Image 1: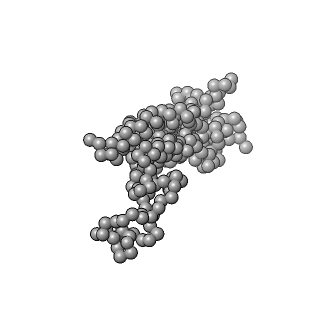
Image 2: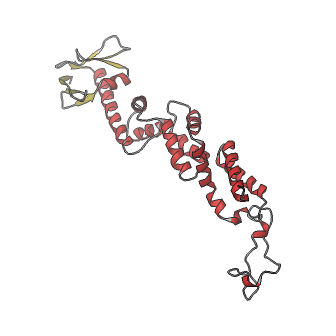
Image 3: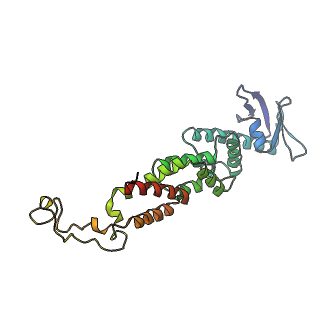
Length: 279
């Protein structure tokens, strides 16, 4: 049975409602139509497709053909997708690919999901560069995770419309040197807290040996070992890496984590002064 339009009503929210026979109700606005390549004559209440010779008209009591119904379904789907996208974004910042995948999982077609992402990106509700900077601050500056780890987190979530490499490079370039130094300090904190991390045995250079020379009597237990030490306790102090070796160890670790060479140099220079007690 042919379907006809029972009413066409514009709401205060600039949403157009089209009620069809059989109880079907479609909602969309001009932005939805533009995203899918349609045009809408606001005064004449006429919806058309630019590539088609005969426009689809939306007037009361008009009979709809199959093409018009399909157009209305797509417009309605995009309208719902935009609402769902904004609902997701109200909970947490999203990358473009991340939000696109979530819309697909909700059952929206790829064309509808991509059109929706075009809109939210144009409106700056989604900004991949802003998202990358947020990840850098939360994971790198606050937790000390290296840039390479943040890249691995961000890569599958960004770049629906642009090369992820460019976005990541711009995000890293926006970080101040102060932020980078704080990230490096946090990343190295666990290593610097434990002296044995700089021992030759832990680095595969040699084995720590027990102390064999005489110890001062006020630091000895009855068994001839330092107070608080056991017979199997290795000697740490005599088998630490040299200062240059420690710097080399830290440099290799930080490069592996993806920190830029200039920032590593700045950190090691500052750390070296503290370690040597330079003024």
